[in-house]
Image 1 (cartoon, rainbow, N blue to C red):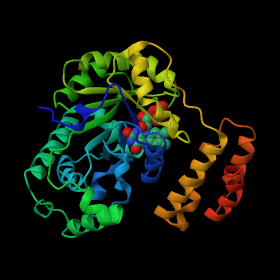
Image 2 (image 1 turned 90 degrees about the vertical axis):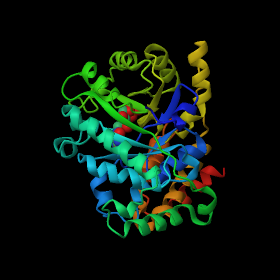
Image 3 (image 1 turned 135 degrees about the horizontal axis):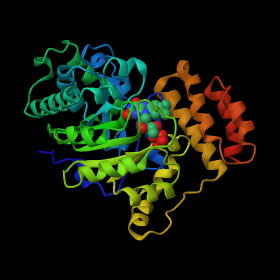
Length: 371
Ligand SMILES: Cc1cc2nc3c(=O)[nH]c(=O)nc-3n(C[C@H](O)[C@H](O)[C@H](O)COP(=O)(O)O)c2cc1C
């Protein structure tokens, strides 16, 4: 049975922010939520082994803020028992859902049998889904996290992380009761060829709440175009199963989102790369939904140069506050993604990718933003 979950309460088609490791961190997602408001967000993928061994006591990869809700933790790995344990932690950290990565094409990850490597071992993929659900079920039934073989420090680590993330609001915002949360997954069309006629039914037999399908095989990585005909076939296979299908790949505009949804009958889409430097694409979620019904053109949010650069600055300020000055250089890649579509954008980009401190950035951007 599929859990009674937030997925069922979302307006369809669902327009969500795709997980992107090294990109959609807590700061990126908070900025996107403030200026665009996607229907759902996912954390970057996090290895279950690292979590269960207590290697990241600050749970830094899993940090999130309330504005992102519903927010789903994405995890990856190969050991079903680790997923069972991680499910308890994800529940305890207050996430709205848990998503299993079965699509990562990286050699290290897929070669070890995780990510898209699981497409080759559907039985293991099914066991992982089962054990994750069992973990959620037992956690919701009251099983304590120190009863399942996790390092004794984990319970305290979670309490500390939650306090740091939510500050004085913890008491008001954290869930007071343990409600089961839904399990979903994100995958690809196949390993070196399209296998959705076998792969999707295998996944559906475990009744995940949702499957996100990136329309490429592992072998393709990011080459070629996403195959939306194959995504349409997957949506057809899943129809009436109770599992939602979200399509993903190469959606660069609100008009493309509408076209893909109408052509394929998916329950929603995730947008990844087109959201970089462009949180405003999610301002059009309602307009996309209405355009899917009427066939009319959706809103294509237009943003002034001053607003783009003001948000670039806000992004850098939040990054600096959250990650600290020493990590500031990481923000350069985000800054450059805001420098698109206006006069002298590439010139400005060249300057922004060299900034070392927030003060330097402010000196460049404040005159433009306040002009
Ligand atoms: C830099 C980068 C990191 C990614 N990291 C993840 C990840 O952590 N988990 C995941 O499921 N997919 C990840 N993906 C895949 C995206 O979620 C998405 O499937 C892909 O980018 C295609 O969608 P798009 O064309 O809208 O970007 C990543 C993609 C990129 C470009």
